[in-house]
Length: 77
Image (cartoon, rainbow, N blue to C red):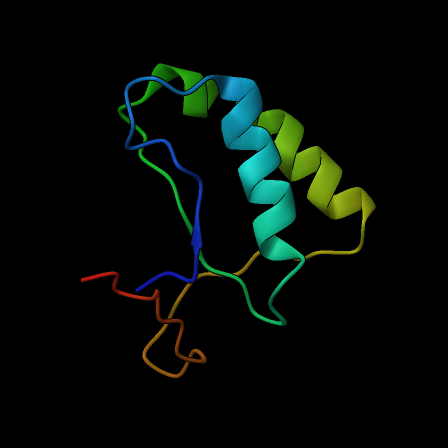
């Protein structure tokens, strides 16, 4: 599951908006799991910038495992 949405599922979003959504979203969680789609060119194009930014702010990256803390998005039904 995820707890931060990059917003890249929308077709009317820019790479700059995806980047901003990721930056703002990770600030809200101790353990953030960001949903991104690798088939979206605008997302792929901003990932280097996001990763560089996140590392400079002290964030780390790790693979999810069955032992990872749970991350759950809110369902808006």
